[in-house]
Each structure stands twice: as C-alpha cells, then as structure tokens.
Length: 230
Image (tube, rainbow, N blue to C red):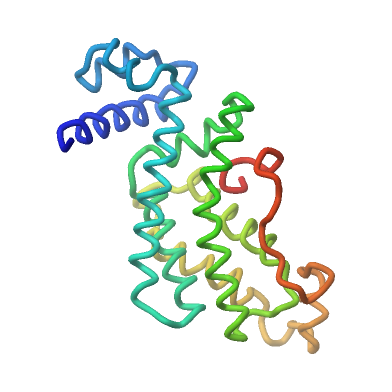
C-alpha cells in the first residue's frame, strides 16, 4: 500500500509539473509517464485521461490544504485570529507548495463541463471550512451580521488566489506578509479614521445581503463560478 501511494504521488507530481509548464493541451501522457518513471500503460490504467489526473490532483490538493489550515487554526480559539491563521496557511500552500494549485487555477476554464462540475463539487469541503470560520466570527460578534458572508468569502479567496498570477519569490514580501496585508484589507479595513463613515452601518449596507440573515453558499455546484472563485 505504501509503495502504491508513493507511485501515485510521483505520477501526480510529474503531471502537475508538466501541466504547469505546458498546459493540459501541451502535455502528453507519455511525457508524464517518462518523467514519473512508469510505463504509459501503467499510468493510463490508473488515470485513463489527463482530466482524470487533474481530478486526482484536486483531491490531493484539497486534502493537503484542509490539513494545513486545520493545523494552523488549532493554535488559536479566537475566531478572527483563526481566519488570519487560515489565510497564512492557505497562501503558504498556494505560493510555496507543489504545482497542483497552479494547475487548478490556470487550467480550470479549459476543462470539460463535466470535469468542471466535479471539481466544484470537490471544492465544497474547502468552502465549508471558510464558511465555518466566518460564521464563528459573526457568532462571536467580531464580524457584522449585516455582511453577505458568501460574497465576503468569494472576495477574500478570489483576491488571495490572484496572488499566484503576480507573486515572485524574493520580490519584497513573503507569503506570510502578503496574507497579513490581505487580512487587514478585508477584515480590518483600508480607510483611515479620518475618512471612515461615522455610521459604519452605511458602509456595511453596501457589502450586505439585504437582510441580517447569514448567507452561506447553498448554490448549485454545476452553476457556480470557476474553481476557488477566480
């Protein structure tokens, strides 16, 4: 079992590396097999198509990210700090992890409708974790009940995902520093006290759901926007 898992990881690592470098269309099954050191027939027995490899990468990536985030948030009981720690863990995985996340971000629009729907369904566990963190912060009184939490989560994760498009190692800010900045932008606010509306509810109304009821994601996964709300 251990050797089988090791071989699977080697194959998925090879696929992620080549997909990131050349895209799905520019990568052949034979090239993946050669890089992984396995026979093409052995690879296609496990993964009949390149899209089946992407789905397997998705499973592995979500499992790893959930584990990393859960470990990070276990260090605090404060709801807002848990969101902060989750952002740090997520951005670290995005920028310092393997190539799988980049494949999901960049190749999602090119996949078949069936595969996109499957990826979105698999994304639910990840989204539920973020919804739970935001829900807890509302319950503690640290976030306003007027906010549309589904929209807030999409803004937050969509913005964080966009870092993958411009980040370069050694560019002046570490992933942790970028996560800290995004946390401040979204949950603390960018306005100075001198220009912040005296009645903050006026500002919140622009970000709200139209009523104080908590709005979590219950949409149809087949009609949701692209992976991780790009």
